[in-house]
Amino acid sequence: MKKIAVGLIAFFLISSTALAQSNVTIYGAIDEAVVYSNNAGGGSVVQMLDSYHWNTVFGFRGTEDLGGGLKVVFDLASYFNLSNGKQFRSDTFFSRSAWVGLSKAEYGTLTFGHHNDFSVLLLGNSPGFNSTFSQTPANADHMAGGYVNNSASYRSPTFGGFTLFALYALPGGTSDTYNRGRAMSFALSYADERFKAAAVGTKINGVNFTPTLAGMKSFLGQTVTPYRSFAVDSQNIYGASASYKFAEKWTAGLSFTDVAFAGFGKYESIRSGTVDVIYDFQPDLKITLGYGRSALGSGRLSNYSLFVDKFLSKRTDIYVGTSFVTSSGATQSAVLFPLAPSTTSRQFAVATGIRTFF
Image 1 (cartoon, rainbow, N blue to C red):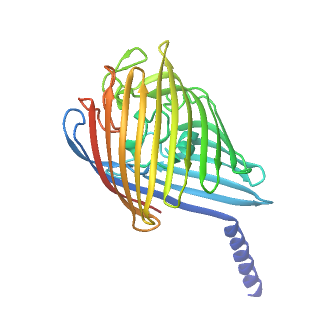
Image 2 (cartoon, helix red, strand yellow):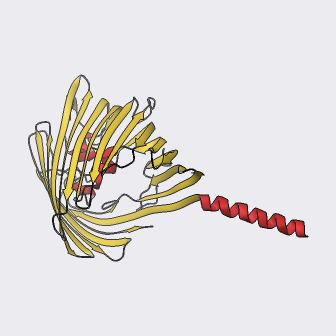
């Protein structure tokens, strides 16, 4: 009996030690809004819109302590549509991230798998990026989400506020819509109590792009039809963002991105810049004013936005956002992604919704 008791005690001690060295967290965000637009595809619409303020996601994040400061880290997460419960992509279970690797404070973190690229990780966290309507046309610069398969990603330790990032990906195959060819990306970020900045450079070979989501009527010399996706040879993304908290209640931010597509023996570029000001009206109430300007070939888009965010708790907020976009140029339609393009040179939308983290 004593031997059994000693054995049970030893088992629970070993199990407790193992549990103390490992950690798995279920996490996610849920966001849903009701949107009105005065002209989406030729008429006014009222619709539910998932991930207006933040991407709706469900995931698992974990670590295991190997001793000596070395840890195994992993992240498995999937986007899904709250309106109908479906996965974001029917052919990809973990659409947001699926990677595993090693981390040590002195040397940084090296992971392998399906990664976000650095545009969404660094530029997409700029202060004024508050809704899907405030992103650049068709998310061409990946500030709202961009992914790379078959990739290795490295993040350095932070020295004096600076952090270095690097990513390299092997070809994904002919059916891969993220990167059929090789991809590489580098980034540098800086952060202190008031000032934050980041610069990103990414090259992806073999990607798909849908120009009508950006309101473009021509692309790489090809005829554009509604929601036709083009397989392009390469996509180069260069971007930078910065923000400064210059008073207790005021924060200003700006960003610039330059995206170049190559395909069909031609080149096409989308250049975008944004300026945003955030006012903390109260500790639980924020107001953001934003302006964005994009050049898409010979076309132009100007985006004006107002966003009011009321926090009910540390994890849950309700919001109202409105955006107004104008277009110029014969090859450009007004569009607030992901709505259908307007049939005129203007489009207006207002949204109200709720977001919660878990």
